[in-house]
Length: 308
Image 1 (cartoon, rainbow, N blue to C red):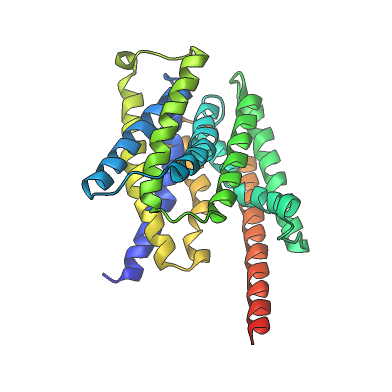
Image 2 (cartoon, rainbow, N blue to C red):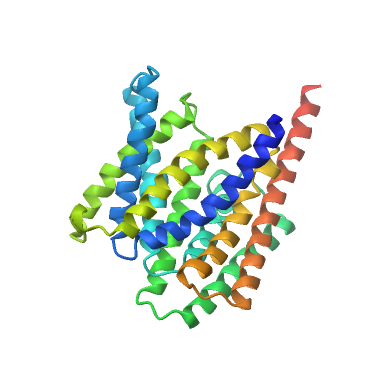
């Protein structure tokens, strides 16, 4: 099997498993607080990852690296993953996945407002409108069929989580620190698990470990093994060996997988409005990504011309 074929298998794994992870998280929080599910998940995954690197002889991070890892843990695994898990208590898994897919739109807006290094072209603007409009349609239709208390609050939490992920992505792309991404992720997971545990203790909304039902433990085990470890490695592999446009396809497939698997396994409502709204949203995200790619290509051409 060639490297390219392995990369396509890794992309398929990333696209499907990360989509089902939203459903697994939804199953996990049905009987256990979201903060508790997230903290246990990150603790186990972090310990496993770090144990592997310590056995290989990896040294401890410096003080500067540890502070950076703590900041990334707050952005990516506490404010993003942790809050997104809490939100799933009151919103469908498909909607959570769809909102998270909006992060490229958020990145464009943040980059434009604070760094002035992106342009809001006609293509970008169209993508932003479609993304927001599609989400609005899905939100409205889900609200019509949902009788869950706190549905709107869950949607707001998902948006906050997506915003945090967007900020974390920007910070990560601008970082000058040279540290193994797998090793860094292990530390971020471990650090975030302790922060989430503190938040859980402050909330006073937790249940004893021995009272966590089998369904939630099974969901956590799936999230740790399939999502945190196997699929994360597959994601990095596909990013290394495929063109960026091809490797990023997982972002468009994840929400669709979450919507249909959620409908099949936990009877989440799925209507034509939800399907159409999801497609509109993903088309919007695609257009924004295309506009960014074109801007990068134009900058590369200008840079090459200046260097002649």
